[in-house]
Length: 467
Image 1 (cartoon, helix red, strand yellow):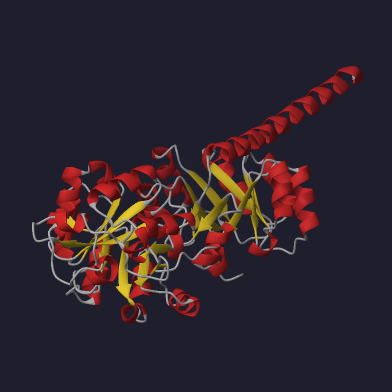
Image 2 (cartoon, helix red, strand yellow):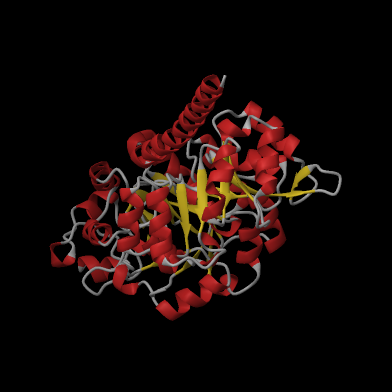
Protein backbone atom coordinates (compact mmCIF):
# COMPACT_ATOMS: atom_id res chain seq x y z
CA UNK A 1 0.00 0.00 0.00
CA UNK A 2 2.85 2.35 0.78
CA UNK A 3 4.43 1.58 -2.58
CA UNK A 4 1.19 2.42 -4.39
CA UNK A 5 0.95 5.74 -2.53
CA UNK A 6 4.50 6.61 -3.55
CA UNK A 7 3.73 5.80 -7.16
CA UNK A 8 0.68 8.02 -7.06
CA UNK A 9 2.78 10.82 -5.66
CA UNK A 10 5.31 10.26 -8.40
CA UNK A 11 2.52 10.25 -10.96
CA UNK A 12 1.12 13.51 -9.56
CA UNK A 13 4.57 15.05 -9.59
CA UNK A 14 5.13 14.01 -13.21
CA UNK A 15 1.70 15.31 -14.24
CA UNK A 16 2.35 18.68 -12.57
CA UNK A 17 5.78 18.93 -14.16
CA UNK A 18 4.38 18.21 -17.62
CA UNK A 19 1.62 20.80 -17.16
CA UNK A 20 4.14 23.49 -16.19
CA UNK A 21 6.45 22.49 -19.01
CA UNK A 22 3.62 22.74 -21.53
CA UNK A 23 2.62 26.21 -20.32
CA UNK A 24 6.17 27.51 -20.24
CA UNK A 25 7.11 26.05 -23.60
CA UNK A 26 3.95 27.49 -25.17
CA UNK A 27 4.84 30.91 -23.81
CA UNK A 28 8.39 30.53 -25.09
CA UNK A 29 7.31 29.47 -28.57
CA UNK A 30 4.63 32.17 -28.83
CA UNK A 31 7.08 34.90 -27.89
CA UNK A 32 9.58 33.55 -30.41
CA UNK A 33 6.97 33.42 -33.19
CA UNK A 34 5.75 36.93 -32.39
CA UNK A 35 9.33 38.22 -32.51
CA UNK A 36 9.94 36.66 -35.90
CA UNK A 37 6.64 37.50 -37.58
CA UNK A 38 6.10 41.07 -36.36
CA UNK A 39 8.49 43.95 -36.76
CA UNK A 40 6.58 45.85 -34.08
CA UNK A 41 3.93 44.52 -31.69
CA UNK A 42 1.86 47.46 -30.53
CA UNK A 43 -0.62 47.22 -27.66
CA UNK A 44 -3.24 49.94 -27.36
CA UNK A 45 -4.25 50.99 -23.85
CA UNK A 46 -7.99 51.56 -23.46
CA UNK A 47 -8.99 54.82 -21.79
CA UNK A 48 -12.79 54.79 -21.90
CA UNK A 49 -12.98 51.01 -21.40
CA UNK A 50 -16.09 50.66 -23.52
CA UNK A 51 -17.12 48.16 -26.20
CA UNK A 52 -17.25 51.07 -28.63
CA UNK A 53 -13.60 51.85 -27.92
CA UNK A 54 -12.69 48.20 -28.50
CA UNK A 55 -14.47 48.32 -31.86
CA UNK A 56 -12.69 51.57 -32.77
CA UNK A 57 -9.26 50.12 -32.14
CA UNK A 58 -10.17 46.85 -33.83
CA UNK A 59 -11.32 48.76 -36.91
CA UNK A 60 -7.97 50.58 -36.93
CA UNK A 61 -6.07 47.30 -37.04
CA UNK A 62 -5.12 46.63 -33.43
CA UNK A 63 -5.23 43.05 -32.22
CA UNK A 64 -3.74 43.43 -28.72
CA UNK A 65 -5.48 45.76 -26.26
CA UNK A 66 -4.71 46.55 -22.63
CA UNK A 67 -7.31 47.14 -19.90
CA UNK A 68 -7.20 47.71 -16.16
CA UNK A 69 -9.49 45.46 -14.14
CA UNK A 70 -10.61 45.76 -10.54
CA UNK A 71 -12.89 43.82 -8.17
CA UNK A 72 -16.22 45.10 -6.91
CA UNK A 73 -17.62 44.74 -3.40
CA UNK A 74 -20.04 42.03 -4.52
CA UNK A 75 -17.24 39.92 -6.02
CA UNK A 76 -17.64 40.88 -9.67
CA UNK A 77 -14.77 42.11 -11.86
CA UNK A 78 -15.13 45.27 -13.90
CA UNK A 79 -12.98 47.41 -16.11
CA UNK A 80 -12.27 50.84 -14.68
CA UNK A 81 -15.76 52.02 -15.61
CA UNK A 82 -19.12 50.24 -15.63
CA UNK A 83 -18.08 47.75 -18.33
CA UNK A 84 -17.89 44.29 -16.81
CA UNK A 85 -15.31 41.64 -17.52
CA UNK A 86 -18.20 39.52 -18.79
CA UNK A 87 -18.92 42.18 -21.44
CA UNK A 88 -15.27 42.07 -22.47
CA UNK A 89 -15.26 38.27 -22.70
CA UNK A 90 -18.41 38.26 -24.83
CA UNK A 91 -16.71 40.73 -27.18
CA UNK A 92 -13.57 38.55 -27.32
CA UNK A 93 -15.69 35.54 -28.27
CA UNK A 94 -16.75 37.45 -31.39
CA UNK A 95 -13.18 38.51 -32.12
CA UNK A 96 -10.99 35.40 -31.71
CA UNK A 97 -8.02 37.16 -33.33
CA UNK A 98 -7.76 39.64 -30.44
CA UNK A 99 -5.73 39.31 -27.24
CA UNK A 100 -6.19 41.46 -24.18
CA UNK A 101 -3.56 42.43 -21.62
CA UNK A 102 -5.14 42.36 -18.17
CA UNK A 103 -3.58 44.92 -15.85
CA UNK A 104 -4.35 45.53 -12.20
CA UNK A 105 -3.13 48.01 -9.61
CA UNK A 106 -3.43 45.40 -6.86
CA UNK A 107 -0.08 44.13 -5.57
CA UNK A 108 -1.11 40.48 -5.06
CA UNK A 109 -2.48 39.74 -8.57
CA UNK A 110 -5.47 37.87 -7.07
CA UNK A 111 -7.87 39.68 -9.40
CA UNK A 112 -6.00 38.25 -12.39
CA UNK A 113 -6.35 34.73 -11.02
CA UNK A 114 -10.01 35.24 -10.21
CA UNK A 115 -10.62 36.60 -13.73
CA UNK A 116 -9.10 33.54 -15.34
CA UNK A 117 -10.97 31.08 -13.13
CA UNK A 118 -14.26 32.79 -13.90
CA UNK A 119 -13.66 33.08 -17.65
CA UNK A 120 -11.53 30.23 -19.06
CA UNK A 121 -11.52 31.95 -22.49
CA UNK A 122 -8.80 34.18 -21.06
CA UNK A 123 -6.41 31.21 -21.20
CA UNK A 124 -6.34 31.63 -24.96
CA UNK A 125 -6.92 35.36 -25.39
CA UNK A 126 -5.60 36.80 -22.15
CA UNK A 127 -2.14 38.14 -21.34
CA UNK A 128 -1.44 38.75 -17.66
CA UNK A 129 0.68 41.71 -16.56
CA UNK A 130 2.50 41.33 -13.24
CA UNK A 131 4.65 43.78 -11.32
CA UNK A 132 6.41 41.34 -9.00
CA UNK A 133 8.46 38.47 -10.49
CA UNK A 134 7.58 36.37 -7.43
CA UNK A 135 4.02 36.17 -8.77
CA UNK A 136 5.06 34.51 -12.02
CA UNK A 137 4.51 30.92 -10.88
CA UNK A 138 1.21 31.74 -9.15
CA UNK A 139 -0.19 33.39 -12.26
CA UNK A 140 1.18 30.64 -14.49
CA UNK A 141 -0.43 27.94 -12.34
CA UNK A 142 -3.75 29.77 -12.74
CA UNK A 143 -3.53 29.05 -16.46
CA UNK A 144 -2.15 32.19 -18.13
CA UNK A 145 0.23 31.24 -20.93
CA UNK A 146 1.49 34.72 -21.74
CA UNK A 147 2.82 37.04 -19.05
CA UNK A 148 4.31 40.52 -19.24
CA UNK A 149 6.57 41.73 -16.44
CA UNK A 150 6.05 45.43 -15.76
CA UNK A 151 9.33 46.76 -14.39
CA UNK A 152 8.10 50.37 -14.23
CA UNK A 153 5.92 50.04 -11.16
CA UNK A 154 8.58 48.49 -8.94
CA UNK A 155 12.24 49.11 -8.20
CA UNK A 156 14.02 46.63 -10.43
CA UNK A 157 17.71 46.80 -11.07
CA UNK A 158 18.96 45.81 -14.49
CA UNK A 159 20.58 42.70 -13.00
CA UNK A 160 17.27 41.65 -11.42
CA UNK A 161 15.45 42.08 -14.71
CA UNK A 162 18.07 40.02 -16.53
CA UNK A 163 17.88 37.28 -13.91
CA UNK A 164 14.09 37.08 -14.31
CA UNK A 165 14.39 36.86 -18.06
CA UNK A 166 16.84 34.01 -17.62
CA UNK A 167 14.61 32.14 -15.14
CA UNK A 168 11.18 32.61 -16.73
CA UNK A 169 9.99 32.69 -20.37
CA UNK A 170 8.03 35.93 -20.30
CA UNK A 171 5.99 37.00 -23.30
CA UNK A 172 7.33 40.52 -22.79
CA UNK A 173 9.15 42.90 -20.45
CA UNK A 174 7.74 46.41 -20.03
CA UNK A 175 10.73 48.65 -19.48
CA UNK A 176 11.23 52.20 -18.42
CA UNK A 177 12.84 54.09 -21.28
CA UNK A 178 15.96 54.58 -19.15
CA UNK A 179 16.45 50.80 -18.99
CA UNK A 180 16.20 50.29 -22.73
CA UNK A 181 19.92 49.93 -23.37
CA UNK A 182 21.67 47.72 -25.95
CA UNK A 183 22.93 45.53 -23.10
CA UNK A 184 19.40 45.03 -21.76
CA UNK A 185 18.04 44.30 -25.22
CA UNK A 186 20.71 41.68 -25.75
CA UNK A 187 19.58 39.87 -22.58
CA UNK A 188 15.91 40.16 -23.51
CA UNK A 189 16.40 38.80 -27.00
CA UNK A 190 18.68 36.03 -25.77
CA UNK A 191 15.65 34.89 -23.78
CA UNK A 192 13.44 35.30 -26.87
CA UNK A 193 11.32 37.79 -24.97
CA UNK A 194 9.84 41.04 -26.28
CA UNK A 195 10.88 44.49 -25.05
CA UNK A 196 7.97 46.92 -24.62
CA UNK A 197 7.96 50.62 -23.73
CA UNK A 198 4.91 52.64 -22.69
CA UNK A 199 4.41 55.81 -24.69
CA UNK A 200 2.63 57.84 -22.02
CA UNK A 201 5.76 59.78 -21.11
CA UNK A 202 7.32 59.95 -24.57
CA UNK A 203 7.20 62.72 -27.14
CA UNK A 204 7.19 61.82 -30.82
CA UNK A 205 10.87 62.45 -31.31
CA UNK A 206 11.90 60.26 -28.37
CA UNK A 207 9.50 57.62 -29.61
CA UNK A 208 11.16 57.73 -33.03
CA UNK A 209 14.53 56.97 -31.46
CA UNK A 210 13.16 54.23 -29.20
CA UNK A 211 11.31 52.72 -32.14
CA UNK A 212 14.69 51.56 -33.42
CA UNK A 213 15.25 49.61 -30.21
CA UNK A 214 11.97 48.36 -28.72
CA UNK A 215 9.96 45.42 -30.06
CA UNK A 216 6.69 47.19 -29.35
CA UNK A 217 4.85 49.91 -27.49
CA UNK A 218 1.89 50.26 -25.21
CA UNK A 219 0.15 53.07 -27.02
CA UNK A 220 -2.00 55.71 -25.38
CA UNK A 221 -4.73 57.72 -27.15
CA UNK A 222 -2.56 60.80 -27.65
CA UNK A 223 -0.23 58.72 -29.82
CA UNK A 224 -2.64 56.08 -31.06
CA UNK A 225 -3.43 57.99 -34.25
CA UNK A 226 0.20 57.77 -35.32
CA UNK A 227 0.07 53.99 -35.58
CA UNK A 228 -3.43 54.04 -37.04
CA UNK A 229 -2.72 56.34 -39.96
CA UNK A 230 0.91 55.48 -40.60
CA UNK A 231 1.64 51.94 -39.42
CA UNK A 232 4.25 51.22 -42.08
CA UNK A 233 5.98 54.60 -42.39
CA UNK A 234 9.45 54.68 -40.90
CA UNK A 235 9.36 58.34 -39.84
CA UNK A 236 5.84 59.83 -39.96
CA UNK A 237 6.76 62.77 -37.73
CA UNK A 238 8.31 64.82 -40.52
CA UNK A 239 6.86 65.81 -43.89
CA UNK A 240 9.44 67.17 -46.31
CA UNK A 241 8.11 70.61 -47.24
CA UNK A 242 8.32 71.04 -51.05
CA UNK A 243 10.53 67.95 -51.04
CA UNK A 244 12.87 69.41 -48.42
CA UNK A 245 15.80 71.78 -48.46
CA UNK A 246 18.29 71.31 -51.29
CA UNK A 247 21.60 73.12 -51.61
CA UNK A 248 20.44 75.82 -49.20
CA UNK A 249 17.26 76.41 -51.24
CA UNK A 250 13.66 75.80 -50.17
CA UNK A 251 10.60 75.32 -52.39
CA UNK A 252 12.61 73.62 -55.14
CA UNK A 253 10.15 70.70 -55.53
CA UNK A 254 13.09 68.96 -57.20
CA UNK A 255 13.56 65.22 -57.52
CA UNK A 256 16.96 65.60 -55.83
CA UNK A 257 15.29 67.32 -52.87
CA UNK A 258 13.12 64.26 -52.28
CA UNK A 259 16.10 61.97 -52.69
CA UNK A 260 18.04 63.94 -50.09
CA UNK A 261 15.12 63.83 -47.64
CA UNK A 262 14.66 60.11 -48.24
CA UNK A 263 18.34 59.39 -47.49
CA UNK A 264 17.85 61.21 -44.18
CA UNK A 265 14.93 59.00 -43.17
CA UNK A 266 11.94 61.06 -44.33
CA UNK A 267 9.18 59.11 -46.10
CA UNK A 268 6.44 61.73 -46.51
CA UNK A 269 7.10 64.17 -49.37
CA UNK A 270 4.90 67.23 -49.73
CA UNK A 271 5.13 68.58 -53.29
CA UNK A 272 3.58 71.71 -54.80
CA UNK A 273 1.56 71.74 -58.01
CA UNK A 274 0.40 74.66 -60.11
CA UNK A 275 -1.35 74.74 -63.46
CA UNK A 276 0.19 75.45 -66.87
CA UNK A 277 -1.53 77.51 -69.52
CA UNK A 278 -2.53 74.27 -71.29
CA UNK A 279 -4.46 72.94 -68.28
CA UNK A 280 -1.76 70.48 -67.19
CA UNK A 281 -0.22 70.33 -63.71
CA UNK A 282 3.44 71.20 -63.16
CA UNK A 283 5.65 70.81 -60.08
CA UNK A 284 5.87 74.45 -59.04
CA UNK A 285 4.80 76.30 -55.92
CA UNK A 286 3.68 79.19 -58.12
CA UNK A 287 4.79 80.99 -61.26
CA UNK A 288 5.57 84.21 -59.39
CA UNK A 289 9.30 84.40 -58.70
CA UNK A 290 10.01 80.68 -58.43
CA UNK A 291 10.23 80.10 -62.18
CA UNK A 292 12.88 82.82 -62.40
CA UNK A 293 14.73 81.65 -59.30
CA UNK A 294 15.01 78.00 -60.33
CA UNK A 295 14.88 78.16 -64.15
CA UNK A 296 16.28 81.61 -65.03
CA UNK A 297 13.29 82.55 -67.20
CA UNK A 298 10.93 85.55 -66.88
CA UNK A 299 8.20 85.25 -64.26
CA UNK A 300 4.94 84.45 -66.02
CA UNK A 301 2.76 81.44 -66.66
CA UNK A 302 3.95 78.81 -69.13
CA UNK A 303 2.56 75.66 -70.68
CA UNK A 304 3.52 72.28 -69.25
CA UNK A 305 5.50 71.58 -72.45
CA UNK A 306 7.54 74.77 -71.98
CA UNK A 307 8.03 73.98 -68.28
CA UNK A 308 9.27 70.46 -68.97
CA UNK A 309 11.89 71.79 -71.36
CA UNK A 310 13.33 74.33 -68.93
CA UNK A 311 16.75 73.59 -67.46
CA UNK A 312 16.79 73.74 -63.66
CA UNK A 313 19.68 75.39 -61.84
CA UNK A 314 22.57 73.22 -60.60
CA UNK A 315 21.58 70.46 -62.98
CA UNK A 316 18.62 69.49 -60.76
CA UNK A 317 15.53 67.84 -62.16
CA UNK A 318 12.12 69.45 -61.79
CA UNK A 319 9.09 67.37 -60.90
CA UNK A 320 6.40 66.34 -63.34
CA UNK A 321 3.73 63.68 -62.91
CA UNK A 322 5.87 61.34 -64.99
CA UNK A 323 9.08 61.96 -63.00
CA UNK A 324 7.16 61.65 -59.72
CA UNK A 325 5.62 58.38 -60.89
CA UNK A 326 9.11 57.06 -61.68
CA UNK A 327 10.65 58.21 -58.38
CA UNK A 328 7.88 56.85 -56.15
CA UNK A 329 7.87 53.55 -58.04
CA UNK A 330 11.55 53.25 -57.08
CA UNK A 331 10.71 54.21 -53.46
CA UNK A 332 7.63 52.11 -52.59
CA UNK A 333 7.78 53.00 -48.88
CA UNK A 334 7.45 56.74 -49.56
CA UNK A 335 4.27 58.79 -49.97
CA UNK A 336 3.45 61.86 -52.05
CA UNK A 337 1.48 64.54 -50.22
CA UNK A 338 -0.12 66.91 -52.72
CA UNK A 339 -0.41 70.68 -52.37
CA UNK A 340 -2.38 71.63 -55.49
CA UNK A 341 -2.91 75.35 -56.06
CA UNK A 342 -6.49 75.54 -57.30
CA UNK A 343 -8.75 72.93 -58.90
CA UNK A 344 -7.74 70.39 -56.28
CA UNK A 345 -10.30 67.73 -57.24
CA UNK A 346 -9.37 67.96 -60.94
CA UNK A 347 -5.69 67.57 -60.12
CA UNK A 348 -6.28 64.51 -57.94
CA UNK A 349 -8.52 63.02 -60.62
CA UNK A 350 -5.70 63.53 -63.16
CA UNK A 351 -3.24 61.62 -60.95
CA UNK A 352 -5.72 58.79 -60.36
CA UNK A 353 -6.64 58.37 -64.02
CA UNK A 354 -3.16 58.72 -65.55
CA UNK A 355 -0.97 57.23 -62.84
CA UNK A 356 -3.04 54.90 -60.61
CA UNK A 357 0.14 53.38 -59.11
CA UNK A 358 1.28 56.85 -58.04
CA UNK A 359 -2.22 57.53 -56.68
CA UNK A 360 -1.82 54.47 -54.43
CA UNK A 361 1.18 56.23 -52.84
CA UNK A 362 -0.53 59.61 -52.69
CA UNK A 363 -1.99 61.31 -49.60
CA UNK A 364 -4.05 64.26 -50.84
CA UNK A 365 -4.49 67.46 -48.89
CA UNK A 366 -7.96 68.96 -48.94
CA UNK A 367 -8.62 72.62 -48.24
CA UNK A 368 -12.32 72.61 -47.38
CA UNK A 369 -14.50 70.07 -45.58
CA UNK A 370 -16.70 69.86 -48.66
CA UNK A 371 -13.86 68.29 -50.70
CA UNK A 372 -13.60 65.18 -48.51
CA UNK A 373 -16.33 63.02 -50.05
CA UNK A 374 -15.27 63.72 -53.63
CA UNK A 375 -11.67 62.79 -52.85
CA UNK A 376 -12.76 59.58 -51.11
CA UNK A 377 -14.85 58.67 -54.15
CA UNK A 378 -11.76 59.05 -56.33
CA UNK A 379 -10.25 56.16 -54.36
CA UNK A 380 -7.92 57.97 -51.95
CA UNK A 381 -8.15 56.40 -48.50
CA UNK A 382 -5.58 58.59 -46.71
CA UNK A 383 -6.56 62.27 -46.62
CA UNK A 384 -5.06 65.28 -44.82
CA UNK A 385 -7.30 68.19 -43.95
CA UNK A 386 -5.10 71.30 -44.09
CA UNK A 387 -6.42 74.45 -42.44
CA UNK A 388 -4.46 77.37 -43.85
CA UNK A 389 -7.37 78.47 -46.08
CA UNK A 390 -10.25 76.50 -44.53
CA UNK A 391 -13.42 78.45 -43.85
CA UNK A 392 -14.65 76.37 -40.90
CA UNK A 393 -14.68 77.04 -37.16
CA UNK A 394 -12.66 74.95 -34.73
CA UNK A 395 -15.86 73.31 -33.47
CA UNK A 396 -16.79 72.34 -37.03
CA UNK A 397 -13.30 70.94 -37.63
CA UNK A 398 -13.42 68.84 -34.45
CA UNK A 399 -16.88 67.53 -35.31
CA UNK A 400 -15.75 66.70 -38.86
CA UNK A 401 -12.65 64.87 -37.60
CA UNK A 402 -14.83 62.88 -35.20
CA UNK A 403 -17.19 61.76 -37.96
CA UNK A 404 -14.71 61.10 -40.80
CA UNK A 405 -11.53 59.07 -41.17
CA UNK A 406 -8.58 61.38 -41.72
CA UNK A 407 -4.90 60.65 -42.06
CA UNK A 408 -4.19 63.90 -40.18
CA UNK A 409 -5.12 67.54 -39.72
CA UNK A 410 -2.46 70.12 -40.65
CA UNK A 411 -2.50 73.65 -39.29
CA UNK A 412 -0.39 76.83 -39.37
CA UNK A 413 1.54 77.80 -36.25
CA UNK A 414 -1.07 80.25 -34.94
CA UNK A 415 -3.69 77.47 -34.96
CA UNK A 416 -1.25 75.07 -33.33
CA UNK A 417 -0.91 77.49 -30.41
CA UNK A 418 -4.62 77.16 -29.56
CA UNK A 419 -6.40 74.26 -27.87
CA UNK A 420 -7.28 72.70 -31.26
CA UNK A 421 -4.38 70.17 -31.29
CA UNK A 422 -5.40 68.88 -27.85
CA UNK A 423 -9.06 68.63 -28.83
CA UNK A 424 -8.15 66.63 -31.92
CA UNK A 425 -5.66 64.55 -29.96
CA UNK A 426 -8.41 63.52 -27.54
CA UNK A 427 -10.17 62.01 -30.57
CA UNK A 428 -7.01 60.16 -31.57
CA UNK A 429 -6.49 62.45 -34.59
CA UNK A 430 -2.89 63.02 -35.71
CA UNK A 431 -1.90 66.67 -36.18
CA UNK A 432 0.84 68.49 -38.10
CA UNK A 433 2.00 72.09 -38.11
CA UNK A 434 3.98 73.96 -40.78
CA UNK A 435 6.63 75.05 -41.58
CA UNK A 436 8.89 74.21 -38.62
CA UNK A 437 12.68 74.47 -38.91
CA UNK A 438 13.50 75.23 -35.28
CA UNK A 439 14.04 72.54 -32.65
CA UNK A 440 12.83 74.83 -29.86
CA UNK A 441 9.65 75.63 -31.76
CA UNK A 442 9.06 71.96 -32.54
CA UNK A 443 9.34 71.02 -28.86
CA UNK A 444 7.05 73.88 -27.85
CA UNK A 445 4.36 72.82 -30.33
CA UNK A 446 4.74 69.19 -29.32
CA UNK A 447 3.96 70.19 -25.73
CA UNK A 448 0.80 71.87 -27.04
CA UNK A 449 -0.30 68.62 -28.64
CA UNK A 450 1.08 68.76 -32.20
CA UNK A 451 2.14 65.32 -33.40
CA UNK A 452 4.46 66.09 -36.33
CA UNK A 453 5.81 68.81 -38.57
CA UNK A 454 6.21 69.96 -42.15
CA UNK A 455 9.83 71.00 -42.37
CA UNK A 456 12.51 71.97 -44.85
CA UNK A 457 15.03 70.05 -42.72
CA UNK A 458 15.48 66.25 -42.75
CA UNK A 459 15.35 66.00 -38.93
CA UNK A 460 17.64 63.01 -38.81
CA UNK A 461 19.14 61.77 -35.53
CA UNK A 462 21.31 64.84 -34.95
CA UNK A 463 18.20 67.02 -34.76
CA UNK A 464 16.36 64.76 -32.32
CA UNK A 465 16.61 65.86 -28.65
CA UNK A 466 18.06 63.37 -26.21
CA UNK A 467 15.81 61.85 -23.56
